[in-house]
Length: 221
Ligand SMILES: Nc1ncnc2c1ncn2[C@@H]1O[C@H](COP(=O)(O)OP(=O)(O)OP(=O)(O)O)[C@@H](O)[C@H]1O
Ligand SMILES: [Mg+2]
Image 1 (cartoon, protein in one colour):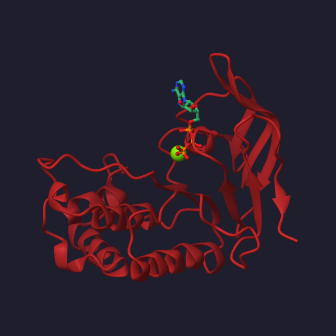
Image 2: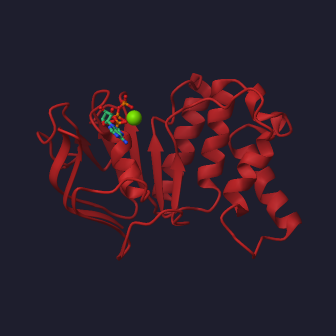
């Protein structure tokens, strides 16, 4: 589903990775581990078509990665909304439901039903109409999860998705991501500092070293 061939990424003199070959298949739960600044978020940005490689290629399905692909769901690394952001919780989730459909929108009642379902999934129904800037960090994060799952994506990119969630919601969000992987057969790329590589959830992982190229993808043994 996701492939990199001979991929290298460098910012100025700083080499993040070099000559990387990697395949992530449908139904695979691929963890990306590594210290701050080692290039984990940059890796996801390459898959999102937001960051160009210096060399090599990145493909999604059989096609080069591209911005705005609706095959991808993305839970970004946490940043807070400004308090005055003029958008309610359900509007944010709604962008995931039909925000990418230029011209042809889902019927309003169908879209609303889907938004209600997603809000319920992440336990956000109670604050559906609250402006997002007034929500706590964890409440905002649950909305991003709902938005990322909205299109039943074939590839789900998660950048430290459990940060700032309480234990109950960590478990609930982990279960949703696992379900997307194992029941829907999506490829999951899960960036984290906190997963144990021997966890039964993951099928493969790679560890990024701060030094650049001293890592390789591995299958869980
Ligand atoms: N657009 C850019 N221009 C220049 N340098 C960049 C750019 N994007 C990222 N970097 C640098 O590349 C390195 C890797 O950044 P990245 O955000 O991918 O790290 P990370 O592994 O996600 O770290 P963290 O665990 O802190 O989230 C950092 O040193 C960062 O400053
Ligand atoms: Mg990061």
